[in-house]
Amino acid sequence: MTNPSLRQLDIFAQMVAAGSLSRCAQTLGVSSAVIERDMASLEMRLGYRLFDDIRGAARLTPAGRRTAQAMTLLAQDDAEDWAEEATPAPTPQPDPSPPPPPALPPALPELLLDTDAQLPSLPATPPPANRAIILATPAPVFGHFQDALTAFEAANDDIAITLDLSVQSAVEAARAIESLRADIAYFYALEEPAGLSSRYGWSEQVNLYAGADHPLARAGSVSRGDLTITPQLAVDPRNGLRPIIDAALARGGARLGPVMLETDNMFDIITALREGAGCFAAFGPMARDLGRMSGIRRLALDVPLPAIEVRQTVNERSLSRPGVQALADFLFL
Image (cartoon, rainbow, N blue to C red):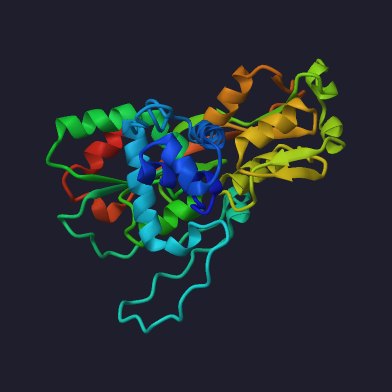
């Protein structure tokens, strides 16, 4: 969800607006099968269902409603990014508001691989006392604790919670904390980053997958040398998961062959895997679902790849507000 220009997210927004599969297909000028396929692919990426019955009333699940709300907030900030090919932005007008805080160094791959990378300290300005608690998290991580979040809201109906699904990495979590866009943030990292206080939640193993008939899928053990001559399938470079996966592969010494396909359409990746076009790295719900599919196998690497940690950080300026620490601890359990 870092890049809301993804085609599947745009189709999801159109589905929410249309209210039915047939109306959405008619609006977009495509078949219902295409819409259904893209929504299934998006649900696989996110790790949870968006619709109870996409062919019927197309009712959003609780997680789907949360996702739609988070996307609406994100679109208000970056409306021009929703289209795959954004229209030219209008001439900027003078903005009386103060400029946003500068981006935090270093770049994402450097932060993931350099444990000594430092992030700036937080200013002392507290957030408004009456603001909703903002929970920033990767979408698959939200899928992990969505039931716990629902239970917390049911027990604390006086506390409002806003979900932000645009955070993936430690750099993005730090920016969200620094700019008061998040009170609690979850993020992916190879280990605890220096300069950003956080606690370890759990780890998700990175694995490589190939078609069941691929020579590496049939091998009893796959070496790093075997991988160098194997074409790679990958998510789009603009996807926030891409640099995280690339960093894990680099840390594990897994140098893959040329990238043959880069896309966020999981249907296309699954098709290419089954056709033996190359191998694909995944972790979390995406890896779980791939491992259950017919025609696809996990490679038996002779040395496992690094696991990616899911970590939680809490904005120190938010701790005085009701419910922030309680929510952080409740989701952490």
